[in-house]
Each structure stands twice: as C-alpha cells, then as structure tokens.
Image (cartoon, rainbow, N blue to C red; front, side, top):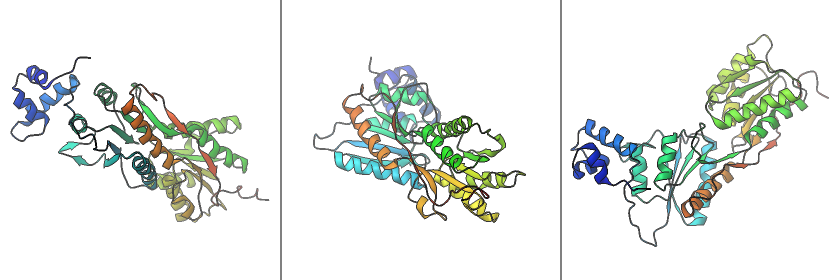
Length: 342
C-alpha cells in the first residue's frame, strides 16, 4: 500500500506543505474553510502523520473512549482495563465522547491522526458508535481498534468484546417464566445498540419457546438510563392489564423500573417482579436487592486491553468477536406472581 505523504495532501489541495501542516495541526493562521477542505482531502486519502519516535524504555500507551463515565457499568469496565494495563506495563489514557482533546472532537479524523502521531499502540471504544470509515482508517494506518459492547453494527470487521447477550436475555426471561409469570414486559435499549438488540431477541426467543405470546404494548423503552426505565414502567403499569414482571435491559434501567413501581405504590416483588442485566455493584444495594444477569464487566475490560496489545504486535490475530459467559444471579426482586406463591 502506497504511503500518503503530507506533500500529497498539499498537492491535492493546491497549497504549500506548510499550509497543509498548519491546517492539520490546528494552527490558528489558516482559515476555517481551508482547514476543513484540507482535512477532507486527508480523510479521503487516508493520510496519517508519522508516528513520534519514542524511547525504547517508554511504555506503550493505549487510549480508551467511553460514551459517558456516569454509570457503574463504565466504572467496572475501566477497573478491569486498568488492572490489565498495569500487569502489562502499559499506560492507559481515558476520555469521554462528549469531551474535547487538543481542540478536536473525540474520534474525529484529526483526533485519530493525533493518536497515531503520538505513537498510540491501540484504541478501545466502549459502547460508542464508530463508522466504517473510522474502522478502515484505523486499519490502514496501523492503529488497532477494539469495540466493547459496540453501539451499532458495522459492515467493516472490527474486533469486539462483549458477553453472551442473547443467552443472558433468555436466562432472565426463563427465570420469570419458571416462577409462573406469563404477562412479562421488557424495557429494551436503543434500537441501534447491538447488545440491547441481542437481549431483546433472547427475551423473544424464551417467550416463543414457552408458547407465551409477547404483548408488544409491554415492549417499551429506548435508552440505558434510569429515567428510560421509570418512564417505560409507568406506562406499562398504568395499562388495563399491567405486567406481573418486567425485564430491564440493564441494571440502571431496572433502577428506574423500581422507582416507577414505588411511585405507584406497587410492591416489589409482591405485585411486580423486576430483573436487570449487568450485575453492577449497585444491584445488590437496591431495595429490594436486584435479581439480574451478570456479565463479567471487569473481565471485558481486561480482555479489551489484552486484545489491543495482541493486535499491536500482530494485526492479523484475533480478528473475531469475543463473548464472555453470562449467568443469572437471583435476589429478592423476583418471586412468583400474586396468587401463585407456595
């Protein structure tokens, strides 16, 4: 593959090499229109700056991008990544998708070029949307990319780390069915979320295999926040035939479901069973303690770091998804529906 040089970008833009360099490095003495034009040409030609030469004794550096840090889920993933990085003697830097780095939006092409220029060994994105163009650019420019619980599906292949979400969704639903529930609602996640979609399919498969029809009016939601869970629960529980159990796509969402039930004076699990997904540190401290499906979040963070380093050493390795096993963790928030208790 022919290496694209800064001179090539300058020639394509009809400017000097100095002007092209200033534009790509965010210098203030280049107009915004020219900066955008040169950045577009650089993106189209898959240009990457030369990597900074670092000392042999300098540790490798990985960069980890989160869509937000405000959930126990993110903390657990980060905790595992930090432990793995320490064991490997690697520096781990983190940022948030809403943040700003060196004047560039996180995951923008200028930001990615800055990573390559700094000699970054790999990039890990957590529950964050990435485009096919970004995946291609990283591959063409030798920047290993790992996606943890990818927020959307891509045509381009990318190494992903997740859990057995379909099986976990089925485990959660099977648990409620085994208790005798038949009118079961689900608070689903965002439409474009890969793990949320897999959990929803697991729910549907369990219901179908049990011969229990899914009431689509009880499949609501669209986010991973407590507010999404609360809003969906209030709608379901105000129905003429409310559910006796609700499966929430995450523990954060389940927290909102519990809040909605509390506001309506509906006892959990006496009148409503609630089950979540993740088994974050908050699950056992909810009231009542939350039945949930555990996905090994700490291990997912560790594996992401390990795979990024493996790809840095050999780009042809591990070009397939990794799924870690889920398991049901029964607690006090689920019970047989009223009238079926022993």
